[in-house]
Length: 207
Length: 91
Image (cartoon, rainbow over all chains, first blue to last red; front, side, top):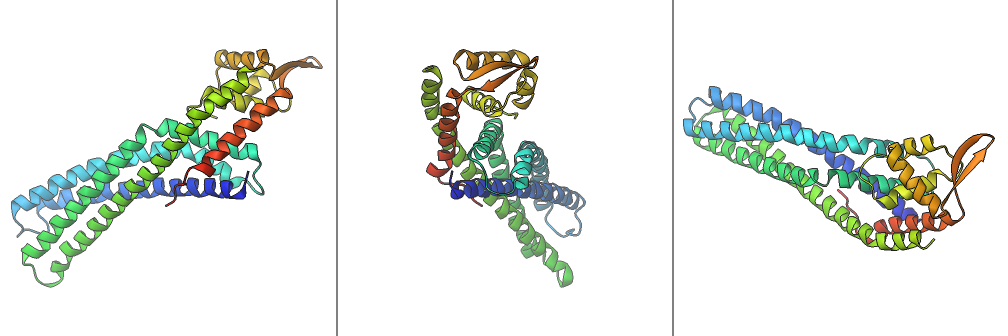
């Protein structure tokens, strides 16, 4: 075992844990903004002058965003639940990591990845879709801001909403790319494990 | 240890855990196996000479043999290589 293997393992675990936490946070934001936009679009506040068609479009997009946010949080929570035990053990370990301890952590990560293998593509899709919805919502807010013709302090609101939505959208798309990279790395590891099984089988059976 | 594991991963877990004498119940609890499946795994390892059944002062248990070391070392090496060979994932 080399220290670099241990630090690479810890880095990956930390990165994935942060990614899932960020994903949950953005899922919660997606839900909150979804509700906010739905209410605003339906009641037409404070954009009474806005074209009703634009308000209905914003309402529909917000409803989709809310639904995606809900699924987003529930899938992230499932993944997080499985990772918590490994995270706790790795963090509580002091001093040099023995080979077998590291291999044990890798086995657990591998088992978790197999468990989450069906959820991850779903998380990637939901994050990506959620991101696109929020980018679309940001564009709609931007259009509202430009076409409203509202003056004074009220003129700032659509632009602020556009900035927030675009930021959430871009972050969600970035998170989906992070999950994709994680998936690619672990799929390759699963392939390697499948190849190793022949060697392990021969070793076990030769006795 | 829960989650989806391969047979080879379960064999490795049993052998590492049994470096010192362990009871059947201890093994199945630690490795998260039911008694039927646990019996199959332990039976296989005993039949191949990787685990030995021992009776110490009336307490029966299992202990990994010298032969198990080769499998444990090979498995550990192969799994650690997964992180050496494949580019890692980072935020």
